[in-house]
Length: 224
Ligand code: SF4
Image (cartoon, rainbow, N blue to C red; front, side, top):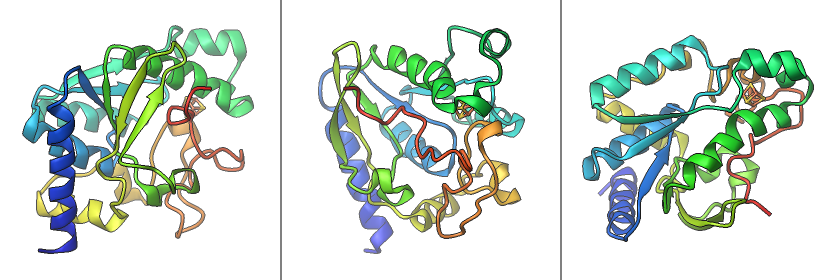
């Protein structure tokens, strides 16, 4: 058995074990390559799994088109999570926070809506991988995650040990189309104002929040 086949089997086994537990499960997906791999693996076992997408209002048009296409083609149970204020309202109130205070912007448009959405579930599947960032180097496939409101979820990352090469090999062997922005050289894709082409080819996330010493949007940082 190849290394990738072993990883696929391990991921399937972990998913099956988690889905056998009581309580509701969801996945968060930004529709990047690894997210799509995980949605594909999950929908084999739970076709109606809620797929939570953070609709920040700042995404690339290509991301939204791709999200809608995959949702239609795979009949996904897509749940868009939105901030309390529209982009227009936020910018009228605070200016363009992604230029001045990106952590506040992420807090309002990603962290708050996500944590409110997650409160409805007990198990949270993510496509995080250790290799993606120094902040993810010690990621465990199953971790407890406490929401600020007090509820503790099981955070499950079946692709924790996968490499970028594994992700792309999986997409290729399953004939799954990737978000077209990868063809333009992007290697990690989030909101448009905070995503650039990578400046360090060895660091796939080096195009995110360039120059702002920010590595994470905050959604994967444990509440204190
Ligand atoms: S990634 Fe950028 S635009 Fe998106 S919520 Fe965070 S700061 Fe705002």
